Image (cartoon, rainbow, N blue to C red; front, side, top):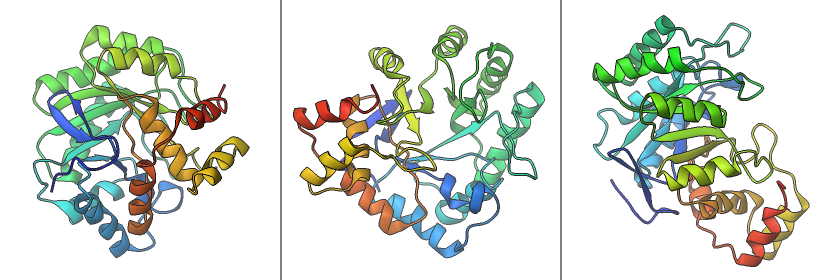
Length: 288
């Protein structure tokens, strides 16, 4: 099923047309993004609701679980409709303590790409983001060796398009000097605005920007201005925060995650909220 009635319409990632309102699958795994979900059937129901709503962009990683979310996606949705595009990321793995140690050596990346292909049950990955930095955020340093490995896998026909995640502006530019990228996936929301200049620059280049933790991360956004605007519009703070992202720039794609089909539907409706210039001006002060 394909729909253009979702909030924000569509965006083109290379030759892939996706809905700007997408779905992030990380929360389908167990606590701490480790192990199976508490309710297996509910997890499958959320993924099927994604298709029923016309969402054509799912974000995942073989590190979630690990392998849990990819296996759930395959169980719920395979064989995949042509309109659905699954985006994954490589560059980190999981340890027994639930940490996210880096895994960006060439052999790590080749193995991770192969594992994503196997767990999703496909022969080509639509889009692979190279995860940089660490749990504290982007860190300076060259990405050349890691990114060139992914370019080689792309040339072998295992990957269609490339992106970077948790990256500095300098790393984005370095990647673009090596090969085209179609998206940047970094932390960004109403209260965390470090990438404002990068978003605008990418928009001019028709490169998508995909904010993770669009609602503040593991601690929800807390702001009196957000609550005031939400109250004035008789809406939830979540709805306002999602709607603000879609109106912030046309190249922003949402991958808000949830393990509830009901919550997913609420997010879709909320993201379609129309914010006035007055609302936007008030909200714009939060992260400044």
